[in-house]
Image (cartoon, rainbow, N blue to C red):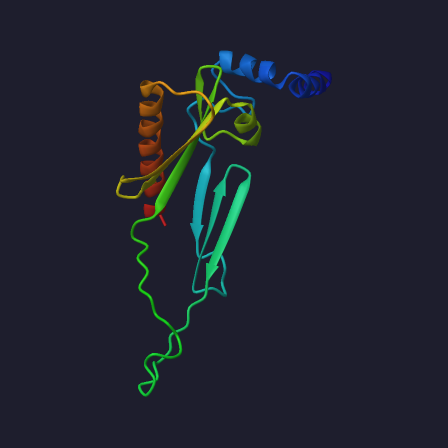
Length: 169
C-alpha cells in the first residue's frame, strides 16, 4: 500500500520522469505495451426502445447511441413539404487512431495523462476502405518519416481489428 502511495506521489511531482521509467521498460503505467490500444468492444441493439442502437467501450470510456426512425407517406399534393428524406450511406465510416510521441517512444492510443506529457500527438483517420481521410499532428517538432510510416501501419492494423469486431455483430 505504501509503495502505491509513493508511486502516486512520484507521478504527480515528476510526471515526465515517472513516465520515462515505464517507457524504458517498454510498458505504460496502465500495463499496456507501447503499441497497444485500449480494449475495445462494440455491442449492437442495446436500447430496446430504439430502432437501432450500439454501445462502444474503449478502455474506461463508454458511448451509447440510439436511433429512432419513422416511416411516413409523402403528401402527393405537396411533395415539397413535410419530411425531407436524404439517403445516408453508412457502408463506409471513419476510424481514427491517435499516437503520442514521448521521449523517442511512440505510444498508440495515449490516455489523457500520456497525451499531456507527449511532445507530439498524431491522429490519423481512415475510412473502412482504407482510404486516408485526415492527418493531424500537434506539436512543434517534426517527426521522422519512419515514425509517421509506423503510425500509418498501426492505423491500418487498428482499422482491420475494428472491421473484424464489427463483422461479429
